[in-house]
Length: 309
Length: 309
Image 1 (cartoon, rainbow over the protein chains, first blue to last red):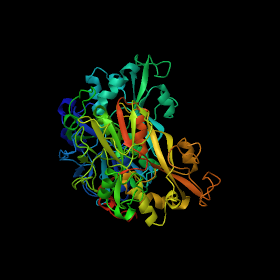
Image 2 (image 1 turned 45 degrees about the horizontal axis):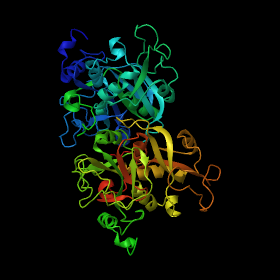
Image 3 (image 1 turned 90 degrees about the horizontal axis):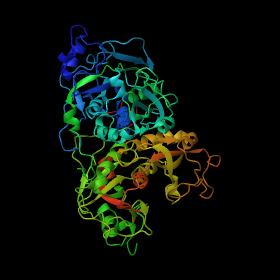
């Protein structure tokens, strides 16, 4: 990160500018606290309508936050971000000064469905003017802060590890060319008696995966996860001691809790074996937006019964 | 239907008035062609926020069209119906002269999670002023007409039978009190080579389940459907001759094609074993709206590649 320190990157805009100038090339976790971070997928425009529909049909793993205002646009976004619980409010501006070709610290490039070797700090050479459409998808960093504030910190954050992510057998609702995709989930261990509170805290984060989709060891089996110690993405989970691999029987009473994961759309795009050039951020190296969590999700709500509306 | 004939019930409003006066007590299939028909669920308001979230997280089986404008409101709706493909258009008025307590031809009532014996033509005695919230959910009648127009009529329509509906093992994304629910699907047999066209035709019907979620005999097995001849709701499917039970091996090359089904929310509500009085329309006896399909879904689109936007 050169001479940059985290406290200088206190806004989404500052993080984007740092990534744009290559002063920042590392992961964005912990940067610009309270600003929404986003997964990026860039597709040729012929796949854009189907991808939009894939997100609309699968909003828990694929919450669409914004997209290029028109095919080829890398510096102007159409936002779908609403204030939580309201249809009436105007849409929030996702990010004003943005360049989708530069503003993630690291990118991945896929050609005809195959990942190219090496990550890169920009995708200027790959971006097709008039054709490529960038999509920004919600990311779970925001609810992790809320869990910590409620005294239920995420273990991987405490242990300074990447969150474990797993392929599952839960089918996505197909949309056009996007068939055969399945949910990717992230996992955080909690005591069974804390699961209701964890569900309640994360429920309002609708645009960033919301409440868990499943929890418990039986759920792990029914999702088709054979070895919780060996995730497909991120780092293997550890027990409280930070050393032993987290597994059933070595779990100290903590059950796995699973959330929809923003890797899902990237996985769905790969399964569809799209022709042409597809791009995405490198895992953990997100695009940070101008929108603040408070604007989108409001404050914690009283979850007592009758508190709707 | 007394002296009423179908051609007099040519608008959603006419159907509602006929149901309201008990001149119409039968199913609504085929009435008011081109007007949107809706599934109804009525819940105590303490469950309303969770149900709204259940729909938002599972839009394919549970597409929420409208709800009571405030708790207790049976004659004023808040609409969520948008013109397809547009965020900018104003929301469409679901229905102006409506009474959710009267306007379905037949209702079902559940107490503390148990179905009461007997259907009824109104729910005036059960409706709690200031508390009950009615929800209207999309129904697949609209895309059936589009399939017929494209030369791919639904077999159950041709055979004048009810569509077969099945419980599956596909988990809904849980929301608050609504846990443990699974997709209910409707099934229509098609030749495998017609499935792409069937998918394409139904794709734009986003607010009424949209394109299929799965197709083929392997899919039937992976959804957990053990006997395609014995659906949990509707009538058992038949072969082309109208007599033989439709089953693998006796299928004349027609594979089962599965869509998300509007029975899903009613099933989810039952699984949640809600306390108090819950109501719904009787299957097939829908509430017909003022909105016309053309307004919501537009016309058929050119599905050739590059045709998005």
